[in-house]
Length: 138
Image (cartoon, rainbow, N blue to C red; front, side):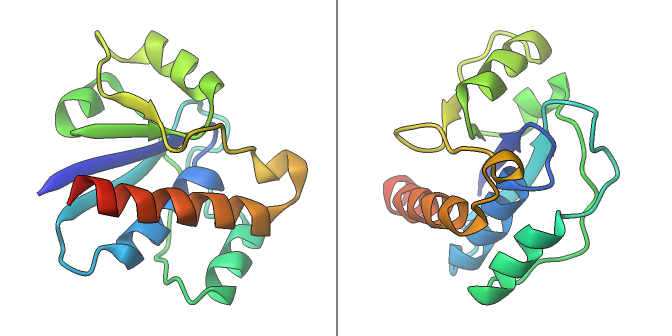
């Protein structure tokens, strides 16, 4: 089983969206998937309500969620750590040991919909990246 961790700033928007999109695409149960934050700002908080709305709109199921922060043990527990933007990667360089498992999820940064307010665009980008990821890691 391939272990994937999605990471963003607070773990209430992008990374949790990626977690549940990827779980919906994992028809063969090939992946173990989680999401976490680089910061402590949202620890314990649920998925941001507009993210729930966009997941429902696309028939992506989700479970109750409590934002959590990544820690150094995650480096050893996951095969791949996918970040949403360069700032996330920078933050992980301070949290994780020698890091050769961290990648951007896509070819470009995925903007934080907390600031852009464009949850639909964020969903489209993450969904496309997750489809590519499933096809790539087969």
